[in-house]
Image: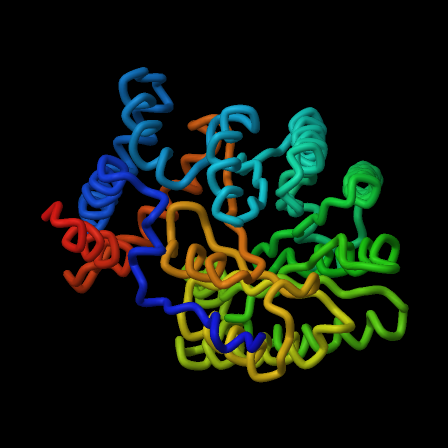
Length: 395
């Protein structure tokens, strides 16, 4: 049967929101409406951080029932299970992502490792969650990665800490192979990314002999990432492992630009959205050109970038459920993509972030900032939710 018959319609809001009842849809509408105002997001973020720091219980409850409920699965894996099962019923897998950030002690690194291992065990036992995400800065001091990226010789204590870090990552990847659960290694800031890339390649060479279990992440807003993607593929052919590549646009634009300006070096990111879009789409095309020899995840919220891959798969008669081709979006956003992709039989998932509210606050603030509008126009998410409200005659 021709795949073209099932190409998803990314304007079909009835499919996008069919999993939400009227009450849930109204809650999303009022939440996105509030986030659409930048001054409210700015004030709310500061007040929320202050109140959580001083453990005001009512603030925690408000956050949990609003923005946390929209963007996170729960405070633990167990609490996230209803969300995971609900997505699974729609043929949407979950990428389990422990959302704690900013760890700095060996005890915290060991705890993060154990949490990631629990996620792998959970993913394997639940049956419909083939991916776990990990930020390697949760397993080592960022300063050590920065020193290595700068080519500095590590002091003995730092060298021991870095060796422990590599052992943690290898331990995690070995368990992933045993449980047949893939690990997505997150990308970080450019000034610490090189040792992460090196370690990701080492783990893929060690563990991706027959299939992609370990994936590296490519932030395509960087000027050098398209060429690095191609270099990584050629390395995989030379070293005889299967490359796993998750493509994103990028998460640290303001931070990257400010650091480049402060330290007076050329910014590593593209100078325009158009160049970033072209880089991302060229990367997707490269992955599709080699889909039988590598695995890829199109982790985009951009309709055009998702459509390009779907249309190319249909054109080449690539099975929509091919085991080397995946899509993914964040929980609480871009349901217009996720649910329509799943409805057409494509492999698609949601990042299900979980953790205690204090731990995931930085993540929630980033989601709120993404959905604010400095122009006064409606954010895309608000526009879509409002359209569905009107379709159901709730507005």
